[in-house]
Image 1 (cartoon, rainbow, N blue to C red):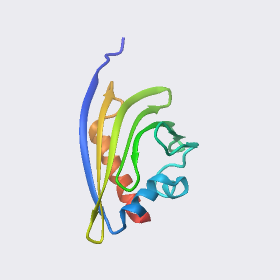
Image 2: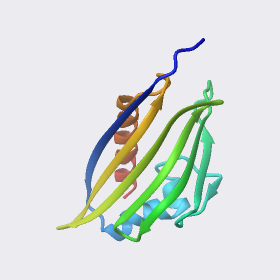
Image 3: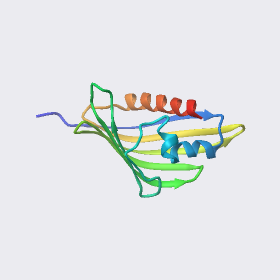
Length: 143
């Protein structure tokens, strides 16, 4: 029998972009813009109660499934979503993410907070935080 456990964690990543909150928000809200820095979704319903769904991964595997439900959207200010992440057929985590967009002189401060339950050692908060930093850096390059 496999030992089952859950590791709970919260991490915060901050970035400042030389782009307006409207432009940063649009990079999350528009599927074509988002696919330039994140995986291209198979389903993209950017609205409260809407779903975002994508599957993919490296050629040698595994296949990751990202399944989102948008909980709150305040244009140009805040995006909150809950999501599951699967690796092949194994659920590796469930999280809630809050993205805050704060106007600054000459740009936007983005605060990304993730609260997660990471299952059975298949993923860790440290690995997820590292991936989030890379993702937000990729967003910055597209802005």
